[in-house]
Length: 427
Image (cartoon, rainbow, N blue to C red; front, side, top):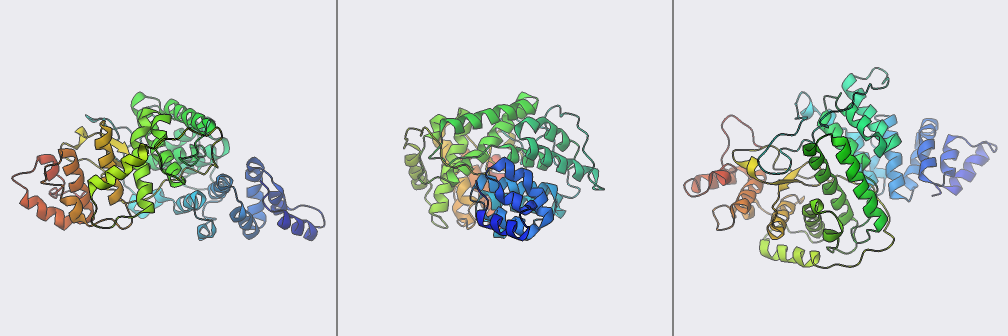
């Protein structure tokens, strides 16, 4: 992986044969060399260093360099992310630069750090819990930063420097931060190994992914947290894999563990809608049949997988942050990271739920009325509730009006999403 032979030659000429830090970065031919050299190069000449980073052709290495700069030089990449090629490294740059856990809306807002017990499987909210018994870790000196932010940055630096072996250390540092759930999400994202395209997953890729899941579970410290970490892993891994696929097929349904199958269904549907957006007039049966036909297509896995890219969390609207009456009895699954959707053990029904969720998360979603039309219909309650919940987030007044119409005929579960709770905000 040569970063820039022409740039190196020019820098050597200017430096009379003595490579400066930028030239040393340019001379690197693999990822570990580049990661070791990037900080000195940045300090010597940020613009020249950034030119080398943006010109790196290996997406996985480019994302690693971006993360290394962002972690060691907080704020250094402000305004620079758009210069990166579109893809995982640009997404990661934006997330690392934006620091969502420090945004004003998160200030002083407590998020749960332990899993909440519920009657049905799956996450109780959009917050990832801390491990059951976090390791006690002391942060390094952060030069005057508040303790909470110092712990967050320390967790980030540890996982970037040492990878999966540092998972317990990083999560222990997250436990010292007031932004614990956001820190956990950040650390776990950085710990996911490179992701191949969904139609080019080789044996080594499967081995790396399942080994990472085992480490996630080990670091969790309890079965409840381990299940949440595993589901979260597959929700991000599968979405990244299908985003990179040339052909949409379903061999991953059998190749991956059973716990990954709901995420495979959603990821394929999400990618299908990126290729062929639906902004109005959707027919749930037709879209489900299209997705089902693609999932039924299988080809043997290749002996060698495709190119790797960083796991990427996709930001979309989210409509199920908390729970209203009766909702803890609904099976839930993570969806593209720390958001969630309803899930179901029946694959056919779960696919229909995935289609509805993916439709509502599009940048230009179909009108709310098309989702709300499920409420009051003869569909199963879980589908009626999903339509009500998604329609409510898209157009609350329309949902309230429908709730008045259906007040005497719909179930309390569905009406819970069509009626504003007294004195409480929506979730």
